[in-house]
Length: 212
Image (cartoon, rainbow, N blue to C red; front, side):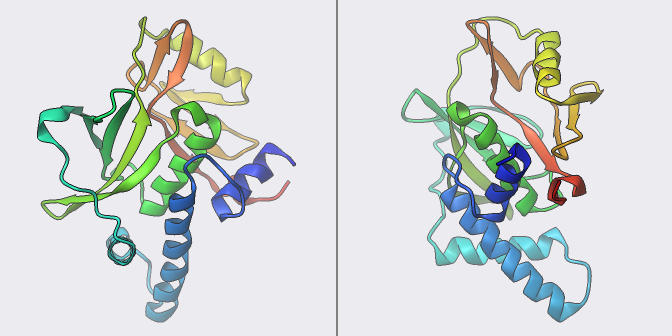
């Protein structure tokens, strides 16, 4: 099986990936309900509609996450808040999917990340809502960097694996049809000389869905 077909199977729900069961179940539900809504309304589907569908799934499956412990707060970026986990081997991230057109795109990104970096896989713990903003809550292994990341090493690693540097810290794999962005030295750490991709933003292009 080719790498592209393996990834397609994962996104379609037929393939296995670390911590992928709940994520794939959500995507299956979203895809089915979005088709139903679009078929009835005959209008362009928007993220606000998708969020309502996602909220229904969360309620039906009791996926609400308890309030994060404010004393464990570490910091935040444009898209997520970061907390210490009770187990020091992990951290908790609250992501509002702001970088994605749809929640389904965010979940696809998690699946792709977990395939490429299983030792740093995201585990979906549930969802949290604050001031009407919805967050996905994921757990990820904690990485203690031992040195500053050299972005030339990141570029070389990705080029060796078929990715082309498009601009700054953004890359594209022409055969797979996958974009990965924002790979700066806070999202790719270095531990004992090995690159650790702790925060990735993957996008699937139309090329991804075409069979070779």
